[in-house]
Length: 171
Image (tube, rainbow, N blue to C red):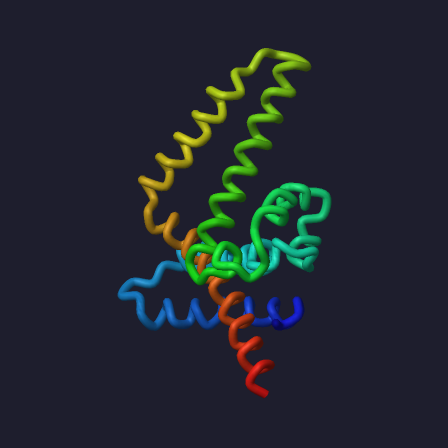
């Protein structure tokens, strides 16, 4: 399995490669979509790739917010299809991160409502999610670029792990 600096280099190189491929293949390349894809790809590669189930560099990059990933570390076996699946690994991490952010948002609103003005945390959270869904429907290309970057970065991580393991066993 490659170490963290190798995974970081793979993330940057494959992000550039993906952008070059996009500009070669897309009939009408869009700079905004390319930037969203690249930002999502690099964020996922550096902070949300497959090794969050370990005390890894990715995990430690979350700093004081690494507690978000503690339940994930407890529930997801390392190098299983849940963490290293080519597509499912990224989808699971997106869903997990969205859920964790929703819970933290709800808890923050609940705490604020206890200390000061009354806020209906459930209604505010629902309104937030409805806004995100409406945005995703209005901008499907942006949504695809963001999700695609996130999922493909995880796939690059898993492929690198698989190739490294194959070479170590073979030679």
